[in-house]
Image (cartoon, rainbow over all chains, first blue to last red; front, side, top):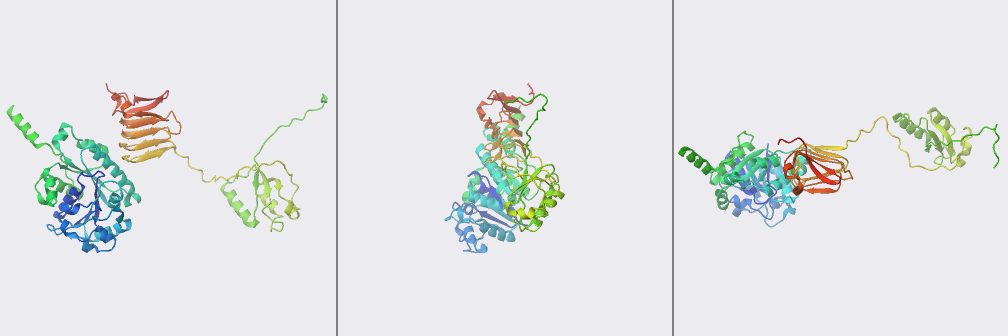
Length: 271
Length: 236
């Protein structure tokens, strides 16, 4: 049974697209058949992060308008044969996403894939609402700062009230993915800590992605972080999040400041 | 003025008013009587002990069953005290007993027969919310109290006609007693509201006494001044 997962946050720049690429790739690496769909019509980025920007011929909006068939628009990843991307149109705006059109494409994708990962645009307007409308599950991306947490709270409220399942009286499972978590700053109290975020958002945590330069490097290379740096902390954290998404029970370890720990050890042995 | 003689008894007259119900039979009478029976079935005591005036303006003289209508109504325990608009149907109702004609009647609004078999459930003047109230959500319940067994996020708003109870953290806005209820209160398990109001008197987050922030607390109006008090005895 295919699962439609929306990656959303409300606020921009928190790592939705990076996470979509990483989660999509991690699922594909685990042997699942995956498509990542860019809903950010007019400001598409997922193709860049996935490194397929030069192969976009037809896009999501072309399929909705019947100008291209779905197999024509689906771009196969060069590295993973069971990973596909459906790019957004850069020349249209969000009004091109009609509910009937999106539903038609999602239904068609459901027949071909195990996972449909929808990369939501920022904001709470049409693009974001369409990205979440047909979702079976949601991953809410939050940075450890108050503005991001409040926007995520708002998005959760919208998820609970406007999605197709919500309108039918159901609730979709929601997972919290904290990104750009810097252990040293959290320890100093410069950042919201995990407990504060969970207290406010009160949805289950699916993972904590540490802040890392490798993320930016991977984006610039056009390669999902789980593919380009599979042994990094970030890739590990995404892989674990994906295992939890698939229903595995894994303890979440809050990333700690490694240097701090080593110096603490050193300091202890000296005394 | 002539004085009444001592041995003449004085007549005492008192007033008493009843609400007379006006029944207007419609053609065909047979069907009308059937509907009447159904009505009586649903609310058996509706016509009991009530004076009924029969208004015949909607039936014609030739209407089938008109001469028997009076008896039909009597068998249903409907007490007719008067008839209105009889001029056009005089001949048809010759067999009816002579009834009084009253003057100065005033029409009152149509009366709806209450359905007594299905009593209206008492409306609960409270609204319980078990989910977190998220940023951007607005709960508007002017009818009474709002009870939230969860947290109220920053950027959300609770508006209640009565009191507001939050059994979690209150981080959003709480507006209580909007319909002029100065006795309404705001209760929070963890008080950190952005803004609170009772009956139009406001208090911002900055005005909450520091020792009560993040604590179980209640807010009420004391001589039109927003007052925060601990909800439980706090450990010193």
